[in-house]
Length: 296
Image (cartoon, rainbow, N blue to C red; front, side):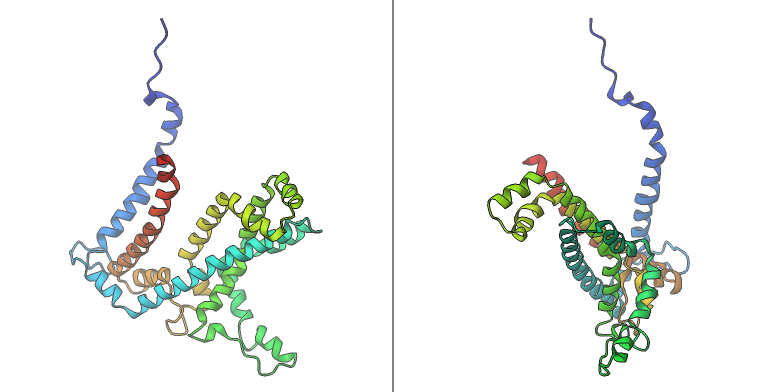
């Protein structure tokens, strides 16, 4: 008579018991905090949370606030350009290093070094470099081009592009390393076959290598998206939201409302809108990535 198989519930019981603190932390801190934020976004909480229900008044005020609209516009501009340039520059640098160049480790370390710096340090460095009085513009004028003028951090129309430069300088090195690791995982026989068939190197990268690096691209997209959402330190270090409110971003708006403006209800409403935006992007992607495969 064969012995009965153990109940699935009691398999790996020690591992399940050890995971209880992690599960409780996820449920209480993450899900609980999210629900708490959403609920109190419908109240008129000021310095302290209140339970006086005001419906969608906070959201109506939010979308009628010019500062919030500017922050959303800046986030879209920064996010789209950061996504495009990070992927393109990172891939091109990785493709160049993939040619087995000399001193590859040195070049890789130099390109990756900015990622080791904090956003505050990066912001302060580029605040100095983009200063028209003693930065890059001053150096070029001292070389003879006296009419040269480049001061994006002091021009409300292009200030977000100055912040973008600093963000790309810090994050592109990591994307390059991830892309290079993906390229090194491509079977050498594929390269040999493409050379035998006379396929140019650039076509091999575009039509063969890139489709095979799909998991790497997904990872880089998640990392870039996370850096876009949390763009706060760069803005504070470089411009403080200025000139005026020209470089405001949603994360800074939330912080200012909750901790400086003593308006928790408005801060909760802005946080909820950021959460909804992330969910709108992630839910369809997760369905196509995981749910679609099961049906296929």
